[in-house]
Length: 237
Image (cartoon, rainbow, N blue to C red):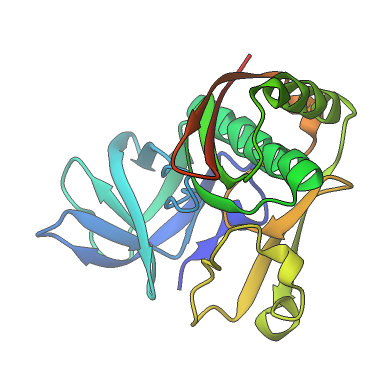
């Protein structure tokens, strides 16, 4: 199994690692540890390089399975046992961390106002969208949501990471802010992101340590996606 450094330290930019398994046909390798987030929960995978001595391989794709985290590379696949350094594109990752934290902040504000669950979401570095089930939407509510979220981000609020046994997490339905639980049945430990006093939910992605690092957001559009469903789009301002 791959040790997922990003799960406990989102600020780690690189880590020494060793090749556990390879697939030359697919040009992918499995590492014993990594800082590369493989994607999920609307957050795209990291990009970066694997450095082997004076040489480097660009990581063009990252995924995970029951074995761990796989890294697709654009060159010759190193042999099993090779020692290397896994290094992410930090500027891209940090922007994703800011964006993902803003997404959680939006969830907290909308939940407080409407008690509405998330029905979908997606993000790129610097922009995101969230879908909510809001039955009585008034266009005049757009600006108050933006203002309240920016006030919360500027407070600032700490962003804490913790882990719960699955049995304990299942006893707390408030950890699931989506309409349908997306936790895999085989998951035995649940990672929890807590923007203290604003939003607490199960999540596997990367976030900043404080909402002060996010800056301000700007809601660019609110779309109707059917009766009672609204899509809120925003950018980091």
